[in-house]
Length: 111
Length: 114
Image (cartoon, rainbow over all chains, first blue to last red; front, side):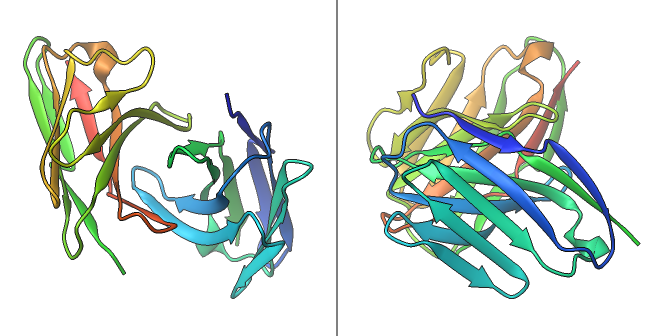
């Protein structure tokens, strides 16, 4: 069964700093990988989606990479802002059309 | 972008009562809808997958008689928590899948069972 792990579980950085969130998965047979943002008590907002054939995707200050063979993905956030504070979840899609979610990284950006 | 709504956003009920949560895709038709449960500071766990007009497929460990799922139309799925108990208190999130690459998530429903 696919297992998705995110490190660190929590991260606190000063405003303006660049940061990297890590995601690893045990089964490399994935269809795609997504990064989501979840604000407290709220649903999920999709940030980036990387197909299994792709290496990275970029959106504004966010860059996500995927190394499928090693079962790893990173989310890079440039010039962090207090508004970036949230929990970030990665999820991998298998052929069963299901998303397996990671445990999340809770990010706090300090003004 | 595609919008998925959930109602209610928050519900408090007494132990032993049943609670129904609605999930609607507002501007698209969803061939498949998923129901997830999220405990505090934990990740989302898939409870069941439902396709319009057919019975839901439940994940291992999820009681189908306790969590009744109905997907009567391409825009509406409901989750009914029957005879709710305090341990059922959680954040329930639905998502809709159109067959493309992306699932669209609802805003979630916070259930508190007293």
